[in-house]
Image (cartoon, rainbow, N blue to C red; front, side, top):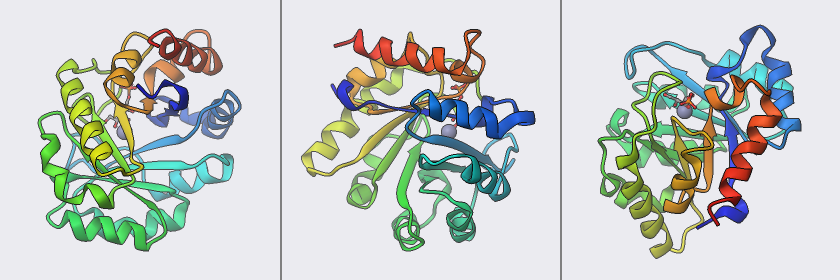
Length: 225
Ligand code: DX5
Ligand code: ZN
């Protein structure tokens, strides 16, 4: 259980892009720890979203770190570009990388924290040999491509395994959960070993507003302890 240091990372995929800067600043003022930015290319996932220009714009609005989640093929071609745009964490998908070991080194070389993401069908063991190179693991709790999907509970066992694997290495690794996170699901993910909750729909589409939703997420985690 890692409830004392749970980080909340609003995903701007669900933000109102007419006033993106304001929404980012509202999330930050409400105590968000990171801003999560979903980059999709229409090839690795069946959707196209945003690229380095949006990262650059968010970097101007935020002072908290930017967590850039690349759901793209051949991510190695764009690492420098995203780093220059203001990314602090760059996460690539194990399923999209032919040479994951090299790519994780390249992320560190461009000055970012290296992250690796796993689709729901991808087992924990697929990253065992590169775990010592990753600062962040993103466990996809939905199939990547869209916001607003339902949390897939069968990923909880994988979160548990990855937490055990990183503790065995005595490595400081953040375990993120991404997809379908809300006040009903966050507790189970944290209990399994996640310490960073990425949330889009529940933060930006909450009827009480961004701050209320972030407070609700934090309260739900406290409730699990
Ligand atoms: C999905 C993205 C998520 C998405 C989560 O491919 O990686 O970051 O924004 O959205 P919600 O919280 O709506 O499931
Ligand atoms: Zn994401």
